[in-house]
Length: 72
Image 1 (tube, rainbow, N blue to C red):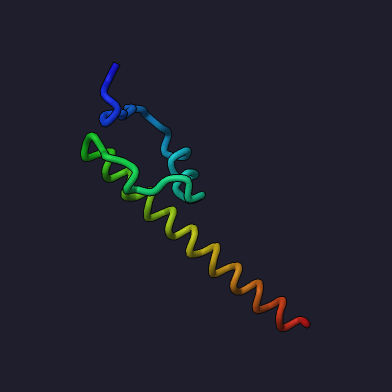
Image 2: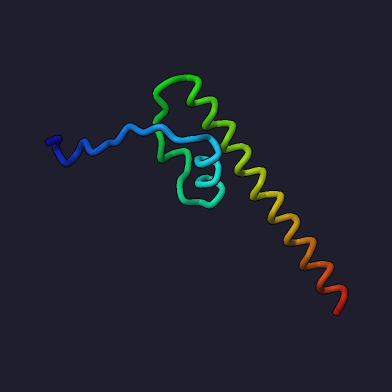
C-alpha cells in the first residue's frame, strides 16, 4: 500500500466528459497534471471552450433579463 501523501490515481477520460466537468465547475485545470504535450494541449483547448461557453451563457442570460425587464 502506498503512503498517504502519494495518493494519486492515473485515469483516462473522454474529452466530452472532461469538458462537461470543467463547464459545470466540478473540476478546474489546476486539478490536473498532464502526462504528455498532447494531453496538455487538449486540456488547454477544453478550458478555453468551457470558459467561452460560460461567458456566452452569462451574456445570453443577461440579455433575457433585460428583455424581460423591458416587457414589464
